[in-house]
Length: 624
Image (tube, rainbow, N blue to C red):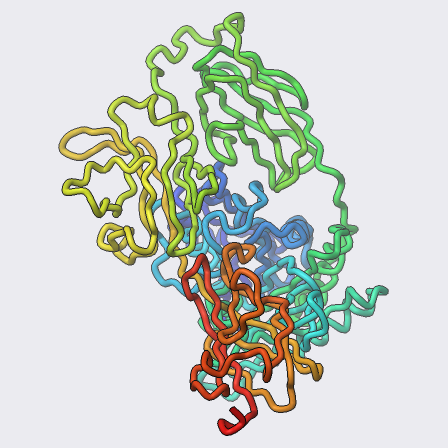
């Protein structure tokens, strides 16, 4: 048991319910720990309220003391996880406690895009997470505090394909995560003791429970040991995950539950994950009542809004709000058939979630109402000179618009990055700052400055970097990066002023080193080769092979090529899915040893080498 939990077992505290800075106010914790709350009570914390990063935390206390289980959903835009976590927010416990975080990464959910601020589940290895304006790191800080209060952790996900311990085909192999219960090792020994956590045994017992309820053999769950502590693990990146942090730092059992993205029935997957969580709770000694799962179609009833600070008004779904150019709209409340996961996005203005934030409107637009990533309603906003004047002082001083987003090109492809957002690119990608929205031309004496870029041919840096092609590997000065680490840079819309330029709006560019994770080779004798970065496969009886799978950290492997040195039969330098004879189609003079025994497989990204693996042939030099 985690000793930090004792106060929650016997004196469930009332925490300050609303925090705007992301740091929970704990000054009242010990005072309110003795406030006399009855067993079976619950608490609701809100961090970053009315933002696109809003973080809701629900604590449910049992009628009897017991261990605490932390359930995290929505760290990625994976609906099974956050919809399953939702099922546990309103339950009643007989024994034990729950901490439920249904939507750890609200922005990635409402935008339905993974990794908008980088992969949040790869930040748990960092120590200082309270970086200015980086909400993903602030959220991880809160989650790490919750882990320290818990005895168990379950992290809910959707993963591609169907996990198998051996390669069967592209949908069933060790690199797929779907329909599996993941742990970082099979048995974990608690430091300084003889006690162990039998993670595999627990997970396999839970698999047996859920599989008894599954009729489709394709859907059964399997234990997936990531073997993260091992030097030869296939999942080194998991050392940055929430489960690894919980196990290695706080020594509590931690599991990831992956439903398959290739099963399209979300309600069925929620049922699977609910059965799994209930089985884990039974193992942990946490007792609950099971309610029926209900997932009605999200439906908007109305939106309460105000204009220029006047009395709130109500507009139904598909209704129209008529205002004058420059009026200020504030979304006060959304009424729907769900209470959680609601957001309102004023298109081309504000942020992904504009609830509670005044937004000045200059053109016709619409307000999109979402339940998580699902559109459930829409309002039209029309600009008209005949609209009512909602206040006597109607934005007379509002002469300059608000920057909503930056328009940039990455390797020639345009992207819109919201103000204060983060653009993650591969190191070596070429960026061009196109403009802002609304245009930077509307801001007198303003310029777009990629802070840390100095044109090589310029004697003086004007700070005006609009329309310049910037190579993120060769053109940036690390001393001007965030914390001088060379991994994150600011892009600013600046206005000249003294003593320092005024920042009108900003965004960040985060650089990731492109890299190879693994290659999968299929040989003529049926053997499969799994080659991680820098590893060698030694051939024995094999005569030919084919590279059938390449995994990198580059989205969709765009710009990735694989070249088998010595093979000349490929197309455009890419030898993936090309049958290659080991002894007649590889040129010995292109081998590493020049004897035809050791050949390099080279992986490149836009022409830059990002990884190598090797093939060793079972032949003697005199054969050539």
